[in-house]
Structure formats: structure tokens, C-alpha cells
Amino acid sequence: MQREPDDVDGRSGRSDASDAHEVSDTHLVARLERLRARVAAALERPTVEPRSPTDLASLVERLERDVDASLAALISERDRNRRMDHQFGELVEVVTALAGLDYSQQATVYEGQDDAINALAIGLNMMGEELANSTAALIRARDEALAANRAKSTFLANMSHEFRTPLNAIIGYSELLYDEQAGSADPLVLRDLGRINSAARHVLNLIQDTLDISKIEADKIELDVRPIELRRIVEDTTATILPTAEQRGNRLDCTVEIVTEHILGDATRLRQILLNLLSNACKFTENGVVALAVTERPGAAERWIDFAVRDTGIGIPKDKQQRIFEAFTQADGSTTRIYGGTGLGLTISRRLCEMMGGTLTVSSVVGVGSTFTAAIPVLPVPESVIL
Image (cartoon, rainbow, N blue to C red; front, side, top):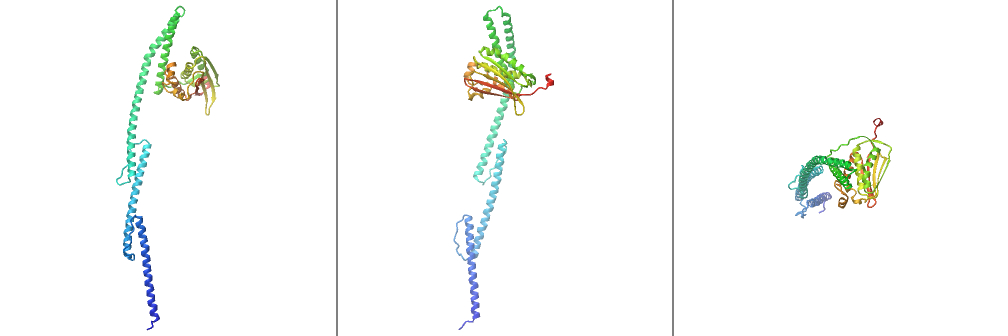
């Protein structure tokens, strides 16, 4: 029997639609299977071959479970990251507080958080506690040192008064006896009287230096600023130091090259600085030259007076040139044994220069000599005051 064309065409159309539907489902299943495999890989789960690759409903169900698991993992990771961000913020705040010497803040240790971050938090907390304890100990030590320094200053002030009163009497009586016996006494007696006077003055100077450094450390010294005549200060100082220079066989030279004759300053403290520098130069120089050069130079904003004391003495090693400005310190122990002294003169002189707004510096070569330069800013005196 011959088939009708319409029947053939109809059956042929239905067959084509069924094939297309099967191809479409198979293609969708394959795509879903690839997606499920990617989700499983993202969740780090092993990929299991589906029991029925063409079972679309089963595959969609498994895919939904994997997607739900993936979402749960993402939410958990998001919450964990938020906790980590919060903890990192706390750690930054603690570090900032430690840098600002605030040891009161503590980092929180979260249960179930990253072990490395918790370890860092614990370490910062321990560091803060140690720093707090160390700082408290340092504060106590500082307060005790300040109290001891105040007690020392009070003691020195009281004892210096007790020492200076009899020493001044010894100096006065020795000078009186020397004058009375100058024409008739045995030369040996006059020599002994001179030694008594010299020793008493030496002890008096040591006591005065000790008292001065104590007052400086306690900020108890105030400058008596008045109009002073520089040339007169220099002349008085060199006249005072001349006998000391001659005792050591030294020649004392002095040059003054200044334009400003009068300045505002503390005459007593300026004289003390120059006497200390010249005395040191004479002490460490024998049969040489000690020279004082006073010069005026312009500065960036003001003029300066330089008092340069140069000697041809033993010199100072380069590595000891800053140490000599420390209290009770000389270049080395042998210097103290040979030349004596407390090592306070240069310390006092530098502190006084700084109080005047100036500086005290040194340049030296061993075996050649040293130059100490006290630089003081010029504070001009009004002409009306000078007149």
C-alpha cells in the first residue's frame, strides 16, 4: 500500500521535533553537569560521575545542593573576613597607642579566629604590659634621681657655705701675716705662708666649681645681664691669669679686634668662662704660648664675639675632645693624676655659654696644642645707656 504524502510529512515532522527535544535536553544536561563540576571544584569537593547523565531532575537537584553549599561557604568566608578586618583594625589601634606611649589599650583575642592574628594580638598585649612596667620603673627611677639631685644640691649649698667661711678666714689671715712679715721674716716662713694661701684658694675654687655645676644642673643659676665693656673684661682677666702663666714659663698674648665695645651680658660669668679657659691652657702648657684672641664676626641674623684661647700644650686626642665637656671628666685618668683638677671647668664654661645663647667648641692636635673658642652673640647696648 502506498503511503499518503500528507501522512508521511506529518509523521516526519513529529519525529524531527522529538529528536530536537532530545538533543536540547542532552545539551542542557551536559552544560549543567559542567557547571556542577565547576561548583564542586570551587568547593574543593571530588567530582562524582552522575548515575544517570540524562536524568535532568536529579542533576538539577544535585546542582542546587552544591550552589547552596557554595553560598554558605561564601557567607562564612565573608563573615570571617569581616572579623579579620575588625581584628586588624584593633591591632592597628593598639600599635598606634604603643607608638604614642599609651599602654592601656589591649587587643582582643577571638575564639576560632586565625591563629597567626591571635598570636600577634597576644604578643602586642604582652609587649604593652612590659612597656608599661618598664615605663613605670623608669618614672620611679627618674623621680628618685631628681629627689637625690635636689638633696645633693641642698647639701652642697650648705656645705659650701660651711667650707668657704673658714677658708676665707685662712686666706685673709695668711695674706695679713705675709704682709706683716714681708720685710723681716725668714724666707722659708714667707714661702710657707704663700703655700697656705695658694692651697686655700685652690680648695675654695674647687668648692665654687662644685657648687656652680650643682646650681646649673638644678637650673638655679640666673644671668645678671647688664651693660659690660668687653676690653675691660679682657684686660682684667689677662691681668689675673698672668702670674699663673708665668709660673709655668708661658708667654701670654692677647689681641682684641672688635667694633662693638659694649654689649649686654653677665660680666661675672663671662669672666669666669675666660678664666677657666685660660687656666686650663696654662695648666696643660709649659714653656710655651697661651694666647687670647677676641674678634667680632657677622652672623646670619646677628653679630658674634669669638673668644679664642689657643695654647701650645699637650693637645687632646680626637676621640676625647667631646668627653672633656662632661662633668668630673678629663681626657684620661693620667691627666687627672698629673695635672689635678675636678674636670668641671669646661663643663661649667660650656653650660654658661649656652645660657648666653652661645657655644663652646674645641679643636686640638696631640703634641701641637688646643684652641677653645667661646662664641657669644652680640647684644648691643643703646647709646643712651652707655652715656
